[in-house]
Length: 114
Image 1 (spheres, rainbow, N blue to C red):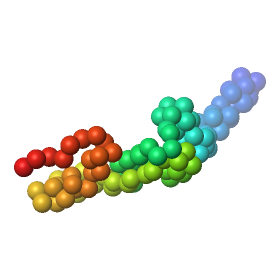
Image 2: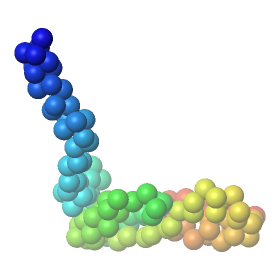
Image 3: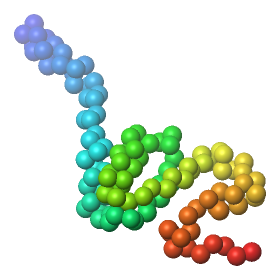
């Protein structure tokens, strides 16, 4: 019985160590951004990129993408995305001001006509 108990204790002792969450691997955002800009987007000098993202959820990819875009010779326009709560509180005038901030020429979209 003692021998079985020893083996049981030896078997369960590593469990607390195994149950601990491993730290996530470090993400090489610069490398990922380089792959996106050069392999996926295949940006050419003079092209324009518009960043529209929620800064609260950015873990570092936006700055790496911005640096890779600029290094490729393209230009960057930043448009801040409002949070869902802020969006619900926006007045029609604020929504119109937000919409007019979009660089329509770079998106090949004609401005809205009244």
